[in-house]
Length: 169
Image 1 (tube, rainbow, N blue to C red):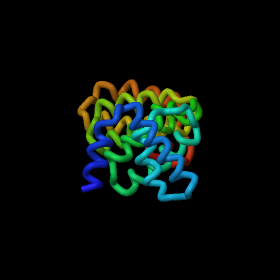
Image 2 (tube, rainbow, N blue to C red):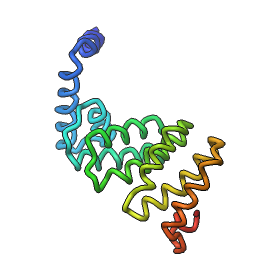
Image 3 (cartoon, rainbow, N blue to C red):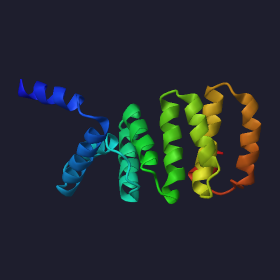
Image 4 (cartoon, rainbow, N blue to C red):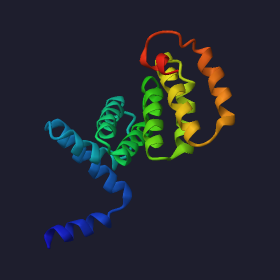
């Protein structure tokens, strides 16, 4: 009965106050070396603070979730990592992984948009990976008319090496 009462009270809190309480809970769990998944759940429900460490942590937890098959969780974590907002040096790789998660969730338009943004990255490895993933998204979406443009951008990256992304392309 007490638990039900607390849950009801929590649902009635103003969003700003609930977000701040989640941020406090996340900090407490983080500094107590508690389960990273619990920390991530509270961070997702908290407001962004512009902390690159938080963004990187959410990104890493999203990769764990995606590898475990938790696509919806991974998408929420990656979106929250971007909303932190992610530092510029993390943004493109987060966009890449968000596009991958959206592709798995069959959110093809969103996946295309995020992979297009990652393809514009100055980080060559991210851009190459995004090009390969974008081809798959466009194929699944039957958007063959867009493949030529992506092909030209991929070729401009000179994918002639032996990295996994280059071999895929």
